[in-house]
Image 1 (cartoon, rainbow, N blue to C red):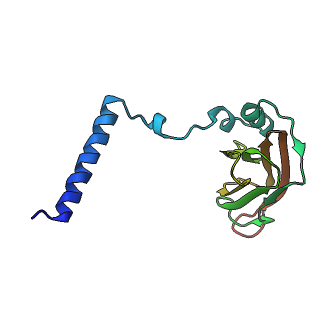
Image 2 (cartoon, rainbow, N blue to C red):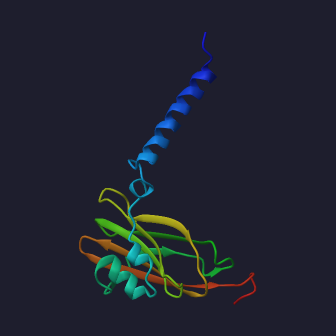
Image 3 (cartoon, helix red, strand yellow):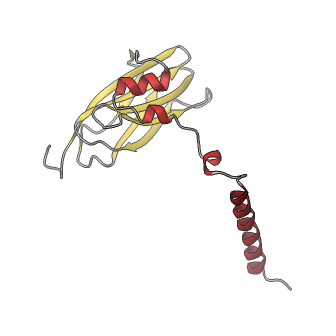
Length: 157
């Protein structure tokens, strides 16, 4: 009788071997397996440049239909919780920018039309700055922003 543990080990070994062969022959490349991301937009130095690379334009319309939740004061700029929700219809993407970061585009999520317009994440902030939520819909590009104060060691900076 064959042990179940032995079968599991043999299956795992065979699967690992197949992946190694696929990587070795070039069939499976890390760039083919990872999600696509707008590298040009993430490497820009200003919010306007990042928006231009991401959407083809830097002109966006302020909207009250976007709810941006951030702390008023972030005691640790390395992990600032941010959530964006919207009641706008046909949301195609939600992006988060931080004006004074060296690379302002912190997050960009492409969505399908059948999902709720909601994104929640943690971002890194180097200093006190505006956090901008940008929502792209079939009818245009909309935004809202909030000032988030980043303290250094919790003593106000």
